[in-house]
Length: 88
Length: 269
Ligand SMILES: Nc1ncnc2c1ncn2[C@@H]1O[C@H](COP(=O)(O)OP(=O)(O)OP(=O)(O)O)[C@@H](O)[C@H]1O
Ligand SMILES: [Mg+2]
Image (cartoon, rainbow over all chains, first blue to last red; front, side):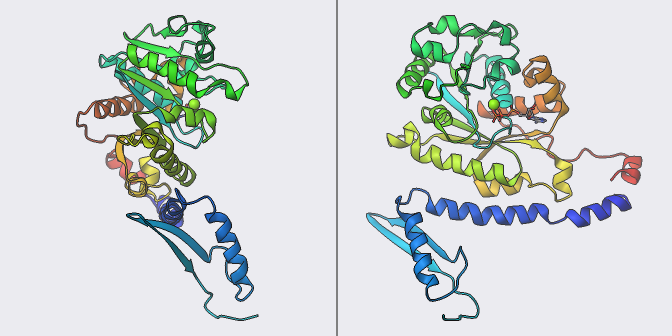
C-alpha cells in the first residue's frame, strides 16, 4: 500500500464497522416489533408521552417487545432514563 | 410439479432483474425447463436484459385476463434450450395482478416447467407481495450497504409470515442470500460491509457473491444474460450460484482482491 492509500484507509477505516453496528441494533429492534400486535407502535407512543410528563427522555427511550412462550405472551417494556434524572 | 423461485430484495436497483435473467438461464443450461416471469407491472425490463424485447406480443396480464393463452405469451429463448420468458405488462393499472389470476398462471407454469423464476419489482407493495406469496424458494438479492441489508431483513420477515407457505403452516420458504455488486478492495479498505458482516446480520444460507463488474453492463447493453459470458467474473459467479442452488458445492470466488505482482504492491494503493 502506498502512502496515499494508507491515509485513505485510515480515514475510512471505520465506516463499514459503524454500518454493521447500526444495522445490528436496527434489525434487532425491527425483528422484535415484527409479528407483534398492531397496537404496539401506538402503545409505545403513548407510553413515551406519559413518561415525558415526569422525565425528559429520548425518543427511543421506550422499547417494547412481545415474546411468546407456549400459550403465554409476555409484553416486555424497557425504559431508559437519562443519566441525570431531573423531575419537572 | 415445478418449483417457484422468487428473486426479491425490497430495495430497488440492487440487481434482481440481472440475477433473475442469469439464474434462469443457468438453470435452463443445466437441463431444467425454466421460465422467467417479470412481475414488474408498468416497468417491464426483463425482456431487455434477456434480449427478447422485440418479440413480446402478449404479456403476463394478457394471460391473466384471458386475452391470450400461455403458449401465445411465452417467448422461447433462441440461445438456450428449455428457457422461456413471460414479459410484464406495461399497463399502469397496479391492480392488474389479481391473486387468483397469478395463482392460476403460476399453477399452469408449474405443470410445464421445472423452475418458475419470478423477477419481483422493488418495494413491498402489491406486485412484490404477489411475487413472494407463492414462492417455494426465495433468492434475496442484497448489496453490501445499510439500506439494502435492512430492506432484505424486512423482506425475510414478510416471507416468513405472509407467504402462502407461512399462512398454510407448511414448510417455510427456503431463503437464499445473493450478495451482489461486491467490491473486495472496498471491503478491504473498510468502506464496505463484508460478506461475513452481511451474513451475520441476515443469517440465511449464502447462495453466492457477485462482484461489481463491468461485464454486467456490457451484457445488459447487448441483451445477453451475463451468465452466458463464460469468461466474465460476474458470469462465473452466477454459474457458481446456480450450481449451489442445484445442490453442488462450490468454493467462493471473486471475494478477495487479486494478488498483485511486485510492482503492483509497490505502486498500487
Ligand atoms: N454485479 C454488478 N456489477 C455492476 N453493475 C450491476 C451489477 N448488478 C447489477 N448492476 C447494474 O445495476 C443496475 C440495476 O440492476 P437491475 O435492473 O438488475 O436491478 P433491479 O433490482 O432489478 O432493479 P429494480 O428494483 O428497479 O427492478 C443495472 O444498471 C445493472 O446493470
Ligand atoms: Mg428489476
